[in-house]
Image (cartoon, rainbow, N blue to C red; front, side, top):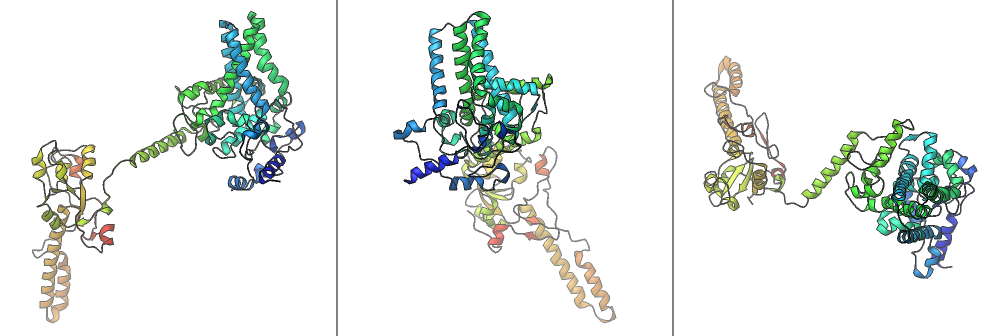
Length: 570
């Protein structure tokens, strides 16, 4: 036996159903997807799904279930033309091909009256809401609690869409959310738009969907009722009812069948299929871009409000698909109305803070992505540390200006400065921090950005005023220390101890008896009137050097890496 044949045989064995609720042959637009879909009325009545022979139940699923399953359970071989007839799911293929052909025939051969058109549109939303408010948000996601009468109504509404039983539909959708964009996703969008829209229902799946808990579905009497009677229900709700309403109502039997039944069904089918395909392809990743779901108004229009799919995959148990009042989500409005009339309770909503947090986080990520495409200034750790003397010496050969502790080469901007070349020329070899920040003109954010691109070095000490302050303090300390040493050396006799004590006490004083100034964070002594606050409060950037209370300079990482030596200007 060939390896491919063995894989097929293994896959077929894994798909053998255990005793339980047997799905009717027309129950699905796709056949049962895994063993835990099988069951009888007896099987559904149990509290938990039977454990799968070939894998895990949801209660004992391992942490590495996805990778383990994909590695250990081989997929079916790719479909080939020579065996294509054996790979087609004929029930769903027939429904999905015959109904559009019938609809086209009816459109070209049957007059559409206004009453039949209105009835067809109404029944379209009737069926669509059965899927979106019932199958999807109620049973697949448990986003609210429905009273029993509303459950039966939604079950009948969803049945009219002819998309499988609640049991099958919700189980597959839970697997879709848990295993999105993996091969365990029954209609994974990563296989392409056509596959996620139709292909997964027409061709036999290459792999079973992943495990999903459906114990709550098995215990629900409404779901058991619909599952047991699914075949007669779809015939009546899908075809007979829309036809007889138009027939008995205004004697349009033909229009009722071709428009309200068949054409309406085609629109409902592809409306739902767009949630699997279009909603994973068109639009914006408003909350997370790690997976394919997207938000878009067009998708919302064609899916009865299911178009804000990125939000939905982030907050799946929220009864809303759209959070803003202006976003189109008739399913949300329907559920809210059911609450108002007492048929629905416990509508689940994620906190607005978390919703906004997700949106802001995604916005920040988009900004970071945009930042990565732009050129940014050199970081201070990538620049050499230059002494004031070397800076002034180099300024004799090219136009260098210090602002914010950085040395800038403004040669490319001399003739472009809006205020004129002379304003820059007059500050070459100087610290223009105060003038730049409002002393002369409070420059714009654009000017700050442009200036930062001209960085060629970091000034040793932060900026010149800091250096002057340090040197002045050091000279005062040296003079005080020399005076103290002289006094101590000249002390003799019984008063020596007192002299030493006196010398020690004068170590903090200058020769003239005034206190030695402590190092301070120097603020430029400029006229404060009409000067920007940034200029008045300017201090040396901590990124470059931090001036400690005891008056020492702490080198930044560049200086430390270079052994404290001054680097060469760029």
